[in-house]
Length: 342
Image 1 (cartoon, helix red, strand yellow):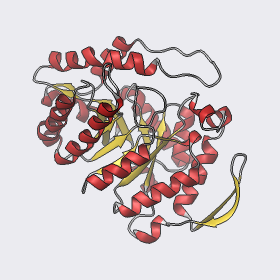
Image 2 (spheres, helix red, strand yellow; image 1 turned 180 degrees about the horizontal axis):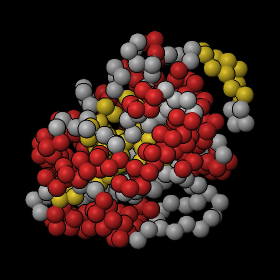
Image 3 (cartoon, helix red, strand yellow; image 1 turned 90 degrees about the vertical axis):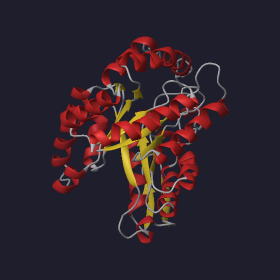
């Protein structure tokens, strides 16, 4: 079982952007010191929900500051990025880090980002499969051209080519954020592991893993590849000697962050959107994920693994909003929870 941290660079009420980003960087550094397997970086634009606008850029910084831990994006939003540009960046990080970079990609949402970056609503509604396939070709082939609906260009060489530099790996790992049966099928048909959201419980995640397997078999994905797919489960982790104290720490801080962060999202076409009740959502997350004493947290992670078959976790550890508390949370995760899992 491999446990990593999920870093949003969340801006809590009363905090500045610099404070949020400093906590994000320190969370990753302490994660490596504490023996965690990975750090996964979120990407958002124009909202305090997350202050990192380029997960791949922050990944580059953290790969340079660390020596062992895997660093991944969770996720780089494909509809607002050119797949070739993102593929070049991923190849560069894969090679220079010695294979420690994972590229998580997702469809994102119908946000104003699509207007600002000029990709348009169609890139979100219909363009994700074309972008994903172009990205995968760039990461696997020596030269690439395109003749799709969105991307058209003559064949050009792939430089740097990741598979030439690290013969033991064909290129950076690619993980797909999945929130619907359509996205599950998209990932499965390409043999790509899923990143499953923190809002889903064990039963829903188990169903998505089973659906992924069915689609993978139907698409002819080799059985050994399907069996080895390292799906990642996102969640929340808050450790305290008593469960009530851990839950209280999150319930005091997270609703304010969620209210201002999620409330700042603006749809590109004015479509109505319904925001979850911040307190109810926080309480839901406390019930679904490892929140409480170390033994309870370890049991919760083990139970999720048994019910879903998932062996990798990306845990949000900054839910208190406080830097010192976040560092302590990560250190306790490494020192008091991980040994119980092994």
